[in-house]
Length: 434
Image 1 (cartoon, rainbow, N blue to C red):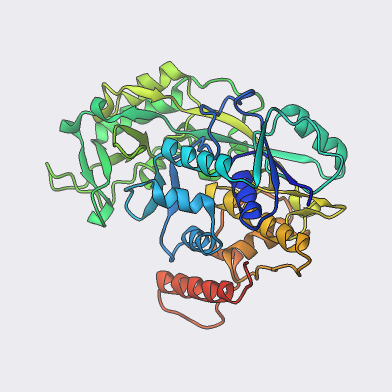
Image 2 (image 1 turned 90 degrees about the vertical axis):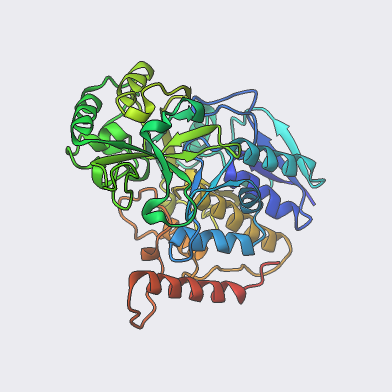
């Protein structure tokens, strides 16, 4: 059997290669790192997390929690590595980003059915089965080759941003405390409070700080799930206090009251030596980040191991190009997976790589497609990105709105979502995933 060519060793590509290899299908995995890096990449490892280290909620009452559980039941490499290298983050699944990526790299490189070929891919292979998982940071030559091959499709784009990382030792714990919102679970977050006056000064400085130049950037072109904190601040003085700086459920142990605003820090590695400033995606100039964020009392002397950065993400108009198997309608031997298809988020990218590979494996084995039903999170995502009736296609996180309603009333949103997840997992259990 000729090897399947998988382009890109990010989350989607690594997952796709793993799913094929574990079924005995040979894979040639093409990865341009470390020979060529993008501005968002910092490591030669596979499955690198370029933004947050959080894979979001791990609860079945949340759609992304359901998607994680579906992936686990599909034998996902990415989920296995995430579970093995998680750091405490309340009800979320956050990981030690370096240990996580290194584990993925070791598993992929050591698999006898996977051959890794380093170097940039500048065109689509002329023959054979291909999964393109080059990501939203697809290199210009490959992006141009895809555009030439499918001129009717067209590329779309949005801007994405990453939050800064600071060392734990540099956080002033006299001005902060450990807790999770409403004291749920273990006290995993560092909470950095601000008074009304401190927040007012911070907000004014944030809305007037100098931004780094990003070609073509406009506030309207930002993906809502990773909106830069300064863009959010410009929407109004209190916008941050209803978003990442929300103080609700966080009582300052020194006063017994909720502060006016709270900046949360989340552990970024297992040792707890590095923390992520939650919700502080930004494209301010680096000196401006240090100046403005130092106005947060607990971060007045913070040491930054990485400043926030912004990058342009490219994605396909998938409803016009792909079917529910992530396969090009006019050229079935080629599939796309990951954020380049318009699924948004680490877990969603992983799911697209998993689904594309599972369906390809079925085809190569002479079996009928799995056809993940819309009642499952994986099926709902696949049907969304392939629905030609979708107008003004935009990147999409998984959500229960993509899944058909229950058809009967359930009191309470969490209870209803739990029932949707139960139905999804029952439907998944009826599929032949091997």
